[in-house]
Amino acid sequence: MVSWPIVLFDLDGTITDPTPGFTASITHALETVGVGRVDETTLRAMIGPPLQEGLAGAGVPPDRIDEAIDAYRERYGAGAMHDAPLHDGIVEVLTELVRTGRVIGLATSKPWVYAEQILERIDLRDRFTVVGGAELDGTRRAKADVIEWTLAELGGPAPSDVVLVGDRRQDVDGARANGIAVIGVTWGFAVDGELDGADVVVHHAAGLTDALGLTAAGERHRRAARVLIVDDADRVLLLRWEPRDTGPAWLVPGGGIEPGETVVEAARRELAEEIGLTGVEVGPTVLTRQWTTPPGHRHRSQRESWRLVRVTNYRPPPVEQLPEAVVEGITETRWVTMDELEATIGESAPEMVEPIRSIVRDGVPDRPFGLNALLT
Image (cartoon, rainbow, N blue to C red; front, top):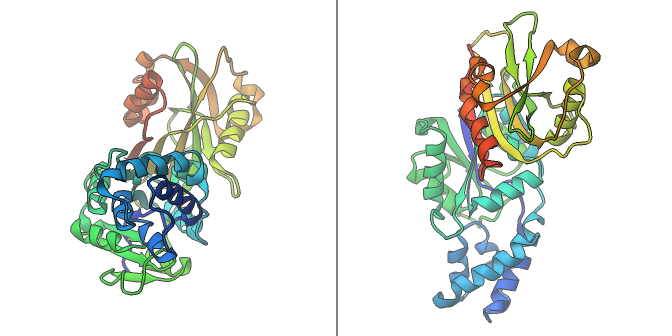
């Protein structure tokens, strides 16, 4: 059984069923340019491929496609994008991929800015190291181009290490153009024969679990939430962690996500336990980080989602007043300036220094930083 270390997913039709929101938005777009409603077969065929192609196929004149796209985005961006229920079992598949140490990317013909918002809303953004998609101006909308970009952002892995999971012919062809394997799923929008050429075709989440090699026993990886806390002076709050069996390290607050918790819920709990901070707004995902350890290492590998929290005039209570922090091995809290990052967090996680500086300097990035690290 093949077990690919890197798994790319399509979004519409594969992870979510976008039919309700897409139908409302495309109907509004077609009516705006005078085309009117289309039959269900035509409508279903438009879900997945680039919007420009679908509108042309629905009869929109070439000189009015941009107008139709603007009308579509007006309705879609106003909230219709979130009217897209998850397919049964897909969250469990994504969670298991993370727990077994796979790297996950998204490759969609949808504009990446919408994909980011959708994943954030359904609390799945932290699963994905990279979110690849089209640009709003219509560039990089072909699936082959999106996959190529996503692979480059993942560091250019060997094609044999990558598989794409998708539901349309564009997924099969795009994967083949990039020399990677493809698993077709039939719960999306493919018609008979459309997934011919896929390496495997599956019909339910259990079949996808088998196809991805997730039924084999393997080391479990933990999901974790971390919080980058920044104050009005652009300082970052760090914790000194001194577990009994390893050397000390400076970290941002955070820890494992408990069963049934969302990332935000876990972040709030960790803030209360580790630095006594409650009642703050937990901001968006600014970074994802997956670290792994060499075979035989005693420590669990981990997939982290970092959220941003801004505070004013906050002083954590002494660590000894926080029983959970003491149990975790936290011995000190410290506000550090950007000039002090190298001497603190940079000693144990040097790859974190520049992303932290960028976030503090520029605010929430358009795309969360995605990092992978091998801990020795």
